[in-house]
Image (cartoon, rainbow, N blue to C red):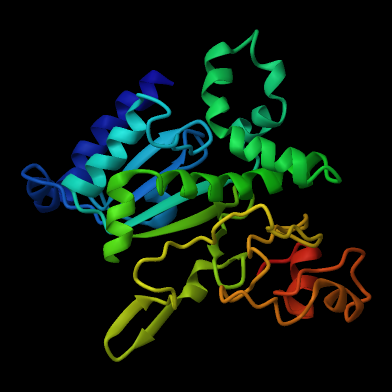
Length: 300
């Protein structure tokens, strides 16, 4: 394998580098990435490959479970890298990207079994205690692959909340100079789903892009000081239904689908009664057609 890597170095230098020599000469003097990409160390994920970006366009943090400990909780490199990316490099977007079949999230669901064999992994995953506790106390009816998918989705949102504890993040969000996004990458299909704060679902990120005479931009109706995530409170509703793929769905709407304190326009009970084809009631923010597609495992 090392021989293959060394041969790859030669191929890179003779082909890709030569073809993009001007780009690398510019990057030798400075970097100006606009996106901080936080994802898992999993060898099956390549941020530049799945986003088709060039060197210099992404500032990347990778670790087990795509985690960012809350401000002050750890002295590791994650916090320093976040601070440097936002303050020194001026990144305007942060993407937290989880992925299906995540080994770190599997370990989180069986945390007590890791302490003896992998004590360092055990200590690291304790930074995801908020995710573990939320899942344990609110999704006790699920197990296996369904519970793993829920944990992956919830963990992405937990890490976004952790990011908001950093003073530099808090300040830039207040100024409207920063946006944060939650993604799930599907190893099986290459598909990426993005968390949508308006519908409280994971949806294709392409649907969040709008084109106008002024150009292409990310569509968001949130106020400038808002982050792409609803605030978790004790009254958050968790409803049965499909998630990304064919598992249960989470609802982070805090009893409101529109943020104004009003209940969702269609209660889950009513939604369930209108779609007798599904064995589980689907959440009020899914149309019957969309719920049917997701539940049966077809692509969105």
